[in-house]
Length: 417
Ligand code: COI
Image (tube, rainbow, N blue to C red):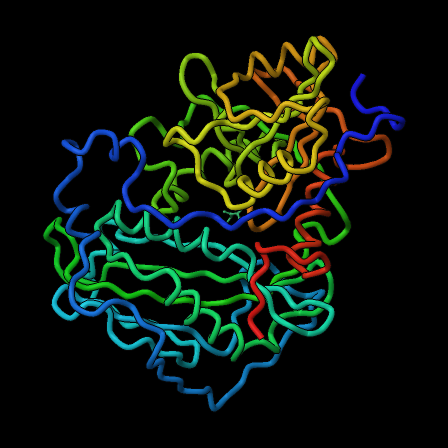
């Protein structure tokens, strides 16, 4: 069953993949139902005042550069670089001049709308140092596209994607010596957009602040892959149809912490989020979820939930699907974005046709899964002999890292210098 050494599963063709198309601002279901589109969302998408421009960035360098930790001591998201970007916006002037400043606290009125009504969205992306010492971003256009769509959904201002990429590039270059050069290390970038209007009225913010901070990070698994155990969770729902589960809102994350603690108290690292009476598999923890099944005709299926509005449009998810469609042997593989249930996974496990499962996200890239508890019963997920990962997760981690570190030239890797 599964993988045979004599029959290669991945085709050798490595045709270049093209970058994603230009962004659109409204979510899919709303595009098809414009009568339900709130006026405020349309207003948020309309240009007001100046558009975001990278032309006149002001730069104030820190007078007190911080000590850098040795890479092995880095803990995800605990250490920040010397500088940050701040770009104010208001509904009269539009986007004001972008500033690169020493990393610093924000001073906000306690009535600021971000604190009360969660006018906040963010992105997670990474910068890498290649073997020549050059700096690379991975698919920044995808992050800009998602951030714009998320901002529009909560009536925060959208922005010119190329301008923000240029501004971020200036910040990354200024703090370039914070990017560890070892393979597996990178600089995690956190573009964040908040409503800053100081008022308790529930309304579209008349002012906002886009800021970018950066944190050097190590490999998610310093000792190699560590496959995780999940608790299939139906006592809490992460996202629902016509909700905002496909948007990278801070407000989508806090409600996941209590179920995660409950799962952890029973010995499981993460929740496998289910939806509906059918128990559709949606996401795992803060990641997209992939499963590999062997089909009755002997083919293998790489399956992940479709982008139906409840699933985050993961950049790593999209990359895995694109690479699989590009490089897996088409005679042996089916690549599916479709709904599937926990019962289907349990049935495959029972029949011996569950091949592998893993999560995907920017932080870990891939996170192999070794067990799922469902209604108190364990579902064992196969791993490769002697390894903490399945074959697809391992292959994807390698292919994506080769692109991120510029070992393989690819349009997804954007060279900054
Ligand atoms: C990721 O897996 O990249 C995430 O979204 C986690 C992040 C919120 C820290």
